[in-house]
Every structure is written in C-alpha cells, then in structure tokens.
Amino acid sequence: MIKKLLTRFNVHNKEDFWKLFGQFFKFCIVGLSNTAVSMGCYYLFLWINADLYMLGSIVGTILSIANAFFWNNRYVFKGSKSDAASVLKRLLKSYVAYGGTSILSNVLLWLEVSLIGISKLWAPVINLVITIPLNFVINKFWTFGKEKDLTEDAGTEGDSDIKEDK
Image 1 (tube, rainbow, N blue to C red):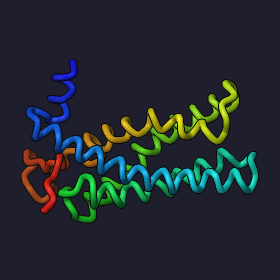
Image 2: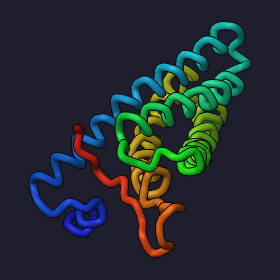
Image 3: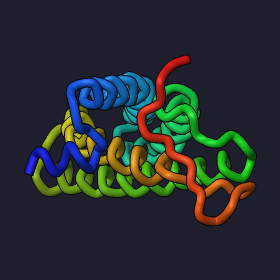
C-alpha cells in the first residue's frame, strides 16, 4: 500500500523521496505564512467580537488563499507555465482547492465549537491536521499538476512535478 502511494507521488528511489519531502517541507513553510494570515484575521475578529468568529475565518481564508497561490506558484511548484492564461487557471484552481478545504474546515469548526464544545481558540488549529496534507495533494496533482500547453500540439503536456532549483 505504501509503495503504491509513493509510486503515485512519483517516488521510485531515495532521491525521489527526498525531493518529495523537500517539496512538502516548502509547502509547509508556505503553509505557515498562510496560517499566520488566516489565524491573524480569525483572532483579530475574535478580539473585536467573539460572535464574529465565522466571519473572521472566512475573511482570513480569502486572504490566505491569495498568499498561498503567490508562494506556491513561485516557490513550491515552480516550473509551471507562466503565460497569463495558465497563471489565471492555476489561481482559479487554487481558490477552488483551498476554498473546498476551507469549507470543510469551517464545517468542522462549527461542529467542534457548537456541538462538541471545543474552544474557539483551538478548533481551527485542530483542523490544520486534516487540511494541510489534503491541500498538498490537491495542489500537487490538480492545481499545479500537468497542464496542456496551449501553444503546442494537443497531445503534449507540461509537468510541474518536483522541480529543481536553478
């Protein structure tokens, strides 16, 4: 099962594993900045009025997705096509991907706070355990995955798998 999973991530040897690990590590560093933006907004709204916790979460999400796209596009999954159409497509996919996991996180937040009684301070932190790996997989394989090059033949595709620093 693990071998099958690693193959899906294009890991066939130690070198491939360390490249994937490095990419995930970079994704986590970008994720720290996303979390700072998102949680900063969330806690700011909570400080203003505790009843605004959901609004704070939504505003933080919108701003953190923009931050995530900027850094993932430049730092984590670099090597992707840079023409305007490709960048816009990846930006929209970023909002769909992170938007989907943000909806999941907000549903979990509501369930944790309203039904289970978990602290409004800790519930979003707990949700990161689910959303970080999920976002990496979605971004790696869908948002920044293979793109058709609109300037080439229909059968030719680009690939944004792990790129080397130059």
